[in-house]
Length: 395
Image (cartoon, rainbow, N blue to C red; front, top):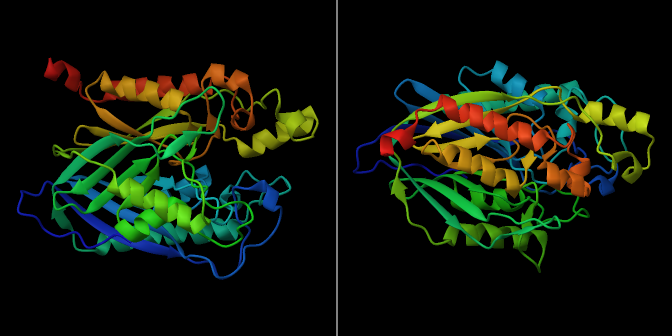
Protein backbone atom coordinates (compact mmCIF):
# COMPACT_ATOMS: atom_id res chain seq x y z
CA UNK A 1 0.00 0.00 0.00
CA UNK A 2 1.01 3.65 -0.27
CA UNK A 3 3.02 4.43 2.88
CA UNK A 4 2.99 7.64 4.81
CA UNK A 5 5.16 10.20 3.04
CA UNK A 6 7.44 11.91 5.56
CA UNK A 7 8.54 15.53 5.47
CA UNK A 8 12.10 16.07 4.31
CA UNK A 9 14.76 18.61 5.11
CA UNK A 10 14.80 19.81 1.50
CA UNK A 11 12.54 22.58 0.26
CA UNK A 12 9.24 20.95 -0.75
CA UNK A 13 8.11 21.63 -4.31
CA UNK A 14 5.02 19.44 -4.64
CA UNK A 15 2.30 18.25 -2.32
CA UNK A 16 1.00 14.70 -2.30
CA UNK A 17 -2.28 13.18 -1.11
CA UNK A 18 -2.95 9.45 -1.29
CA UNK A 19 -5.64 6.87 -0.69
CA UNK A 20 -6.03 3.17 -1.52
CA UNK A 21 -9.65 2.50 -2.47
CA UNK A 22 -10.63 -1.17 -2.02
CA UNK A 23 -12.53 -2.70 -4.94
CA UNK A 24 -14.43 -5.61 -3.40
CA UNK A 25 -17.66 -6.44 -5.29
CA UNK A 26 -20.37 -8.12 -3.23
CA UNK A 27 -20.53 -11.07 -5.65
CA UNK A 28 -18.10 -13.24 -7.58
CA UNK A 29 -17.58 -11.97 -11.13
CA UNK A 30 -15.94 -13.46 -14.25
CA UNK A 31 -12.26 -12.61 -14.65
CA UNK A 32 -10.87 -10.91 -17.76
CA UNK A 33 -7.79 -11.43 -19.87
CA UNK A 34 -7.89 -15.12 -20.76
CA UNK A 35 -10.79 -16.09 -23.04
CA UNK A 36 -9.96 -19.77 -22.45
CA UNK A 37 -11.54 -19.39 -19.02
CA UNK A 38 -14.84 -19.22 -20.86
CA UNK A 39 -17.72 -18.01 -18.75
CA UNK A 40 -16.38 -19.33 -15.43
CA UNK A 41 -17.05 -17.17 -12.40
CA UNK A 42 -14.18 -16.24 -10.09
CA UNK A 43 -13.69 -18.23 -6.91
CA UNK A 44 -13.68 -16.70 -3.41
CA UNK A 45 -10.46 -16.30 -1.46
CA UNK A 46 -8.44 -14.09 -3.80
CA UNK A 47 -6.66 -10.82 -3.09
CA UNK A 48 -8.56 -7.60 -2.50
CA UNK A 49 -7.87 -5.35 -5.44
CA UNK A 50 -7.52 -1.57 -5.18
CA UNK A 51 -7.64 1.71 -7.03
CA UNK A 52 -4.45 3.34 -5.73
CA UNK A 53 -4.89 7.13 -5.83
CA UNK A 54 -2.18 9.78 -5.76
CA UNK A 55 -3.08 13.45 -6.10
CA UNK A 56 -0.12 15.55 -7.13
CA UNK A 57 -0.24 19.33 -6.71
CA UNK A 58 2.13 22.09 -7.72
CA UNK A 59 0.96 25.66 -7.15
CA UNK A 60 -2.49 25.83 -8.82
CA UNK A 61 -2.10 22.69 -10.94
CA UNK A 62 -3.42 19.33 -9.78
CA UNK A 63 -3.88 15.86 -11.25
CA UNK A 64 -5.30 12.62 -9.87
CA UNK A 65 -3.14 9.66 -10.86
CA UNK A 66 -4.84 6.29 -10.35
CA UNK A 67 -3.39 2.79 -10.64
CA UNK A 68 -6.51 0.68 -11.14
CA UNK A 69 -6.00 -3.03 -10.50
CA UNK A 70 -8.02 -4.10 -13.52
CA UNK A 71 -7.60 -5.38 -17.06
CA UNK A 72 -8.40 -2.26 -19.12
CA UNK A 73 -9.91 1.21 -18.80
CA UNK A 74 -12.91 1.38 -21.16
CA UNK A 75 -13.68 4.90 -22.34
CA UNK A 76 -17.03 4.76 -20.51
CA UNK A 77 -15.25 4.08 -17.21
CA UNK A 78 -12.87 7.00 -17.64
CA UNK A 79 -15.74 9.28 -18.65
CA UNK A 80 -17.82 8.36 -15.60
CA UNK A 81 -14.91 8.76 -13.18
CA UNK A 82 -13.92 12.09 -14.72
CA UNK A 83 -17.55 13.28 -14.61
CA UNK A 84 -17.58 12.72 -10.86
CA UNK A 85 -14.18 14.35 -10.25
CA UNK A 86 -13.18 18.01 -10.17
CA UNK A 87 -9.55 17.61 -11.38
CA UNK A 88 -7.96 15.87 -14.39
CA UNK A 89 -7.80 12.09 -14.00
CA UNK A 90 -4.93 9.95 -15.29
CA UNK A 91 -6.58 6.55 -14.90
CA UNK A 92 -4.39 3.55 -15.72
CA UNK A 93 -5.21 -0.17 -15.56
CA UNK A 94 -2.39 -2.42 -14.33
CA UNK A 95 -3.66 -5.03 -16.83
CA UNK A 96 -3.75 -7.87 -14.35
CA UNK A 97 -5.44 -10.89 -15.91
CA UNK A 98 -6.85 -11.87 -12.50
CA UNK A 99 -9.38 -9.03 -12.05
CA UNK A 100 -13.07 -8.85 -12.98
CA UNK A 101 -13.55 -8.49 -16.73
CA UNK A 102 -13.70 -4.76 -17.48
CA UNK A 103 -15.72 -5.36 -20.64
CA UNK A 104 -18.60 -5.27 -18.14
CA UNK A 105 -17.77 -1.55 -17.89
CA UNK A 106 -17.65 -0.99 -21.66
CA UNK A 107 -20.98 0.44 -22.76
CA UNK A 108 -20.31 -0.59 -26.37
CA UNK A 109 -19.95 -4.26 -25.43
CA UNK A 110 -23.54 -5.43 -25.98
CA UNK A 111 -22.63 -8.27 -28.39
CA UNK A 112 -22.24 -11.73 -26.86
CA UNK A 113 -18.76 -13.25 -27.39
CA UNK A 114 -17.80 -16.51 -25.60
CA UNK A 115 -15.28 -15.87 -22.85
CA UNK A 116 -15.88 -12.10 -22.77
CA UNK A 117 -18.36 -10.33 -20.50
CA UNK A 118 -21.08 -8.05 -21.81
CA UNK A 119 -21.84 -4.55 -20.55
CA UNK A 120 -23.53 -4.24 -17.14
CA UNK A 121 -24.55 -0.68 -16.31
CA UNK A 122 -24.73 -1.43 -12.59
CA UNK A 123 -21.07 -2.42 -12.52
CA UNK A 124 -20.03 0.66 -14.50
CA UNK A 125 -21.80 2.75 -11.86
CA UNK A 126 -20.25 0.75 -9.01
CA UNK A 127 -16.66 0.95 -10.26
CA UNK A 128 -16.84 4.60 -11.33
CA UNK A 129 -18.32 5.60 -7.96
CA UNK A 130 -15.67 3.62 -6.08
CA UNK A 131 -12.76 5.12 -8.04
CA UNK A 132 -14.15 8.65 -7.95
CA UNK A 133 -14.86 8.16 -4.26
CA UNK A 134 -11.24 7.15 -3.70
CA UNK A 135 -10.12 10.35 -5.41
CA UNK A 136 -12.49 12.38 -3.22
CA UNK A 137 -11.13 10.74 -0.06
CA UNK A 138 -7.56 11.42 -1.19
CA UNK A 139 -8.49 15.08 -1.67
CA UNK A 140 -9.54 15.20 1.99
CA UNK A 141 -6.17 13.93 3.25
CA UNK A 142 -3.63 16.36 4.65
CA UNK A 143 -1.27 17.37 1.82
CA UNK A 144 2.29 16.18 2.38
CA UNK A 145 4.90 18.64 1.02
CA UNK A 146 7.65 16.85 -0.85
CA UNK A 147 10.44 17.21 -3.35
CA UNK A 148 10.67 14.52 -6.05
CA UNK A 149 13.51 12.69 -7.76
CA UNK A 150 13.63 10.34 -10.75
CA UNK A 151 15.66 7.39 -11.97
CA UNK A 152 15.51 5.62 -15.34
CA UNK A 153 17.43 2.41 -15.84
CA UNK A 154 17.43 -0.75 -17.95
CA UNK A 155 16.61 -4.18 -16.52
CA UNK A 156 16.33 -7.74 -17.86
CA UNK A 157 12.89 -8.40 -16.38
CA UNK A 158 10.85 -8.29 -19.61
CA UNK A 159 11.06 -10.40 -22.75
CA UNK A 160 9.43 -10.16 -26.15
CA UNK A 161 6.30 -12.18 -26.86
CA UNK A 162 6.23 -11.42 -30.60
CA UNK A 163 8.59 -12.72 -33.31
CA UNK A 164 11.09 -10.26 -34.74
CA UNK A 165 10.64 -7.73 -31.94
CA UNK A 166 12.55 -6.42 -28.95
CA UNK A 167 11.56 -4.81 -25.65
CA UNK A 168 13.15 -1.79 -24.02
CA UNK A 169 13.24 -3.11 -20.43
CA UNK A 170 13.06 0.55 -19.38
CA UNK A 171 12.28 1.06 -15.69
CA UNK A 172 11.25 4.51 -14.41
CA UNK A 173 11.00 5.24 -10.70
CA UNK A 174 9.87 8.50 -9.12
CA UNK A 175 10.40 8.85 -5.38
CA UNK A 176 10.21 11.52 -2.73
CA UNK A 177 13.52 12.97 -1.61
CA UNK A 178 13.32 10.75 1.47
CA UNK A 179 13.15 7.62 -0.73
CA UNK A 180 9.43 6.84 -0.59
CA UNK A 181 8.17 5.31 -3.88
CA UNK A 182 5.68 7.51 -5.73
CA UNK A 183 5.40 6.14 -9.30
CA UNK A 184 6.99 3.09 -10.92
CA UNK A 185 6.65 2.41 -14.67
CA UNK A 186 7.70 -0.88 -16.27
CA UNK A 187 6.62 -2.56 -19.49
CA UNK A 188 5.60 -6.19 -19.01
CA UNK A 189 2.19 -7.84 -19.09
CA UNK A 190 0.75 -8.68 -15.67
CA UNK A 191 0.55 -12.37 -16.53
CA UNK A 192 2.58 -14.16 -13.87
CA UNK A 193 -0.64 -16.07 -13.11
CA UNK A 194 -1.89 -18.50 -15.73
CA UNK A 195 -5.41 -18.91 -17.12
CA UNK A 196 -6.27 -21.76 -14.73
CA UNK A 197 -6.25 -19.30 -11.80
CA UNK A 198 -9.81 -18.26 -10.93
CA UNK A 199 -9.12 -16.06 -7.91
CA UNK A 200 -8.33 -12.35 -7.95
CA UNK A 201 -4.72 -11.16 -7.87
CA UNK A 202 -2.89 -7.93 -8.58
CA UNK A 203 -0.09 -9.99 -10.22
CA UNK A 204 3.37 -8.35 -10.19
CA UNK A 205 2.12 -4.71 -10.13
CA UNK A 206 -0.06 -5.54 -7.13
CA UNK A 207 2.83 -7.30 -5.39
CA UNK A 208 5.03 -4.23 -5.92
CA UNK A 209 2.44 -1.79 -4.54
CA UNK A 210 1.61 -4.11 -1.63
CA UNK A 211 5.24 -4.56 -0.57
CA UNK A 212 6.94 -1.30 -1.53
CA UNK A 213 4.24 1.35 -1.98
CA UNK A 214 3.60 3.99 -4.60
CA UNK A 215 1.70 3.56 -7.84
CA UNK A 216 2.67 1.08 -10.56
CA UNK A 217 1.85 1.82 -14.20
CA UNK A 218 2.43 -0.63 -17.09
CA UNK A 219 4.90 0.69 -19.66
CA UNK A 220 4.75 -0.20 -23.37
CA UNK A 221 3.49 -3.75 -22.90
CA UNK A 222 2.25 -4.53 -26.43
CA UNK A 223 4.94 -7.13 -27.08
CA UNK A 224 6.38 -7.60 -23.57
CA UNK A 225 5.93 -10.35 -20.99
CA UNK A 226 7.56 -10.75 -17.56
CA UNK A 227 10.91 -12.53 -17.88
CA UNK A 228 10.37 -14.96 -15.03
CA UNK A 229 10.00 -18.75 -14.91
CA UNK A 230 9.40 -21.35 -12.26
CA UNK A 231 7.17 -21.31 -9.21
CA UNK A 232 3.58 -20.32 -8.62
CA UNK A 233 1.98 -17.17 -9.94
CA UNK A 234 2.35 -15.54 -6.52
CA UNK A 235 6.01 -16.50 -6.32
CA UNK A 236 6.74 -15.13 -9.79
CA UNK A 237 4.84 -11.90 -9.04
CA UNK A 238 6.84 -11.29 -5.87
CA UNK A 239 10.10 -12.12 -7.62
CA UNK A 240 9.47 -9.56 -10.39
CA UNK A 241 8.40 -6.91 -7.87
CA UNK A 242 11.45 -7.46 -5.66
CA UNK A 243 13.91 -7.37 -8.54
CA UNK A 244 12.38 -4.18 -9.93
CA UNK A 245 12.57 -2.55 -6.51
CA UNK A 246 16.20 -3.61 -6.04
CA UNK A 247 17.39 -2.58 -9.49
CA UNK A 248 20.44 -0.25 -9.36
CA UNK A 249 19.52 3.41 -9.43
CA UNK A 250 20.96 6.87 -9.86
CA UNK A 251 18.31 9.43 -8.91
CA UNK A 252 18.22 13.03 -10.08
CA UNK A 253 16.02 15.79 -8.62
CA UNK A 254 12.88 16.77 -10.53
CA UNK A 255 12.44 20.46 -11.23
CA UNK A 256 9.13 21.88 -9.99
CA UNK A 257 6.37 21.98 -12.62
CA UNK A 258 3.10 20.16 -13.26
CA UNK A 259 0.81 20.16 -16.28
CA UNK A 260 -1.88 17.87 -17.70
CA UNK A 261 -2.35 17.74 -21.48
CA UNK A 262 -4.32 15.67 -23.98
CA UNK A 263 -4.21 15.20 -27.75
CA UNK A 264 -6.64 13.26 -29.97
CA UNK A 265 -5.46 10.31 -32.06
CA UNK A 266 -6.83 10.53 -35.59
CA UNK A 267 -8.16 6.98 -35.76
CA UNK A 268 -9.36 5.26 -38.91
CA UNK A 269 -12.74 3.52 -38.70
CA UNK A 270 -12.67 0.16 -36.83
CA UNK A 271 -11.45 -2.52 -39.24
CA UNK A 272 -10.79 -6.22 -38.57
CA UNK A 273 -7.28 -7.43 -39.30
CA UNK A 274 -7.23 -9.64 -42.44
CA UNK A 275 -6.66 -12.70 -40.20
CA UNK A 276 -9.26 -11.80 -37.56
CA UNK A 277 -12.23 -13.70 -39.02
CA UNK A 278 -10.24 -16.85 -39.80
CA UNK A 279 -8.50 -17.04 -36.42
CA UNK A 280 -11.79 -16.55 -34.55
CA UNK A 281 -13.68 -18.95 -36.86
CA UNK A 282 -16.33 -16.40 -37.86
CA UNK A 283 -17.38 -14.82 -41.15
CA UNK A 284 -16.33 -11.34 -42.27
CA UNK A 285 -19.68 -9.73 -41.42
CA UNK A 286 -19.60 -10.96 -37.83
CA UNK A 287 -15.92 -9.97 -37.60
CA UNK A 288 -16.85 -6.38 -38.43
CA UNK A 289 -19.64 -6.40 -35.81
CA UNK A 290 -17.28 -7.75 -33.15
CA UNK A 291 -14.58 -5.18 -33.90
CA UNK A 292 -17.16 -2.39 -33.84
CA UNK A 293 -18.11 -3.48 -30.32
CA UNK A 294 -14.52 -3.65 -29.11
CA UNK A 295 -13.18 -0.55 -30.80
CA UNK A 296 -14.09 3.03 -29.88
CA UNK A 297 -14.54 5.59 -32.63
CA UNK A 298 -12.19 8.06 -30.95
CA UNK A 299 -9.12 7.99 -28.72
CA UNK A 300 -6.63 10.38 -27.17
CA UNK A 301 -3.29 10.39 -25.43
CA UNK A 302 -2.92 11.95 -21.98
CA UNK A 303 0.26 13.46 -20.59
CA UNK A 304 1.34 14.51 -17.12
CA UNK A 305 4.36 16.81 -17.16
CA UNK A 306 6.25 16.44 -13.88
CA UNK A 307 9.19 18.79 -14.09
CA UNK A 308 11.10 17.76 -17.21
CA UNK A 309 9.62 14.27 -17.35
CA UNK A 310 6.50 13.28 -19.29
CA UNK A 311 4.19 10.46 -18.23
CA UNK A 312 2.65 9.71 -21.62
CA UNK A 313 -0.59 7.76 -21.25
CA UNK A 314 -1.69 5.71 -24.28
CA UNK A 315 -5.24 4.27 -24.53
CA UNK A 316 -4.09 0.79 -25.52
CA UNK A 317 -1.06 -1.48 -25.68
CA UNK A 318 1.79 -0.02 -27.78
CA UNK A 319 4.83 -2.09 -28.70
CA UNK A 320 8.47 -1.22 -28.15
CA UNK A 321 8.81 0.06 -31.76
CA UNK A 322 6.32 2.81 -30.95
CA UNK A 323 7.73 3.40 -27.47
CA UNK A 324 11.08 4.30 -29.04
CA UNK A 325 9.51 6.66 -31.59
CA UNK A 326 7.40 8.40 -28.94
CA UNK A 327 10.39 8.73 -26.62
CA UNK A 328 12.48 10.30 -29.41
CA UNK A 329 9.70 12.77 -30.28
CA UNK A 330 9.69 14.04 -26.70
CA UNK A 331 13.49 13.99 -26.44
CA UNK A 332 13.63 16.40 -29.39
CA UNK A 333 11.76 18.90 -27.20
CA UNK A 334 14.14 18.29 -24.29
CA UNK A 335 12.09 15.85 -22.17
CA UNK A 336 12.58 12.40 -20.74
CA UNK A 337 9.47 10.24 -20.79
CA UNK A 338 7.70 7.09 -19.72
CA UNK A 339 5.26 5.54 -22.19
CA UNK A 340 2.28 4.10 -20.27
CA UNK A 341 -0.29 1.61 -21.56
CA UNK A 342 -3.99 1.39 -20.67
CA UNK A 343 -4.51 5.04 -19.81
CA UNK A 344 -7.96 6.70 -20.06
CA UNK A 345 -9.22 4.27 -22.70
CA UNK A 346 -8.50 1.13 -24.73
CA UNK A 347 -8.29 1.04 -28.52
CA UNK A 348 -6.55 -2.37 -28.58
CA UNK A 349 -2.97 -3.32 -29.39
CA UNK A 350 -1.04 -0.62 -31.25
CA UNK A 351 1.58 -1.79 -33.74
CA UNK A 352 3.77 -0.28 -36.43
CA UNK A 353 2.58 -0.97 -40.01
CA UNK A 354 5.38 -3.52 -40.50
CA UNK A 355 4.47 -5.32 -37.31
CA UNK A 356 0.76 -5.25 -38.18
CA UNK A 357 1.50 -6.94 -41.52
CA UNK A 358 3.34 -9.72 -39.66
CA UNK A 359 0.02 -10.86 -38.15
CA UNK A 360 -0.34 -12.84 -34.94
CA UNK A 361 -2.48 -12.40 -31.83
CA UNK A 362 -1.56 -8.78 -31.12
CA UNK A 363 -2.15 -7.75 -34.73
CA UNK A 364 -5.63 -9.28 -34.74
CA UNK A 365 -6.46 -7.13 -31.73
CA UNK A 366 -5.22 -3.97 -33.46
CA UNK A 367 -8.68 -2.66 -34.21
CA UNK A 368 -8.24 0.42 -36.41
CA UNK A 369 -6.07 -0.86 -39.24
CA UNK A 370 -2.36 -0.99 -40.06
CA UNK A 371 -1.71 2.74 -39.61
CA UNK A 372 -2.83 3.03 -35.98
CA UNK A 373 0.77 3.15 -34.75
CA UNK A 374 1.54 5.93 -37.21
CA UNK A 375 -1.49 7.91 -36.03
CA UNK A 376 -0.33 7.47 -32.42
CA UNK A 377 3.13 8.89 -33.13
CA UNK A 378 1.59 11.82 -35.03
CA UNK A 379 -0.48 12.59 -31.92
CA UNK A 380 2.64 12.43 -29.74
CA UNK A 381 4.43 14.83 -32.08
CA UNK A 382 1.51 17.28 -31.93
CA UNK A 383 1.41 17.07 -28.14
CA UNK A 384 5.18 17.60 -27.95
CA UNK A 385 4.78 20.88 -29.81
CA UNK A 386 2.46 22.10 -27.04
CA UNK A 387 5.30 21.76 -24.53
CA UNK A 388 7.87 24.50 -23.93
CA UNK A 389 10.90 23.69 -26.09
CA UNK A 390 13.57 22.83 -23.51
CA UNK A 391 15.93 21.68 -26.26
CA UNK A 392 16.25 25.30 -27.47
CA UNK A 393 16.89 26.49 -23.92
CA UNK A 394 19.60 23.86 -23.47
CA UNK A 395 21.31 24.97 -26.68
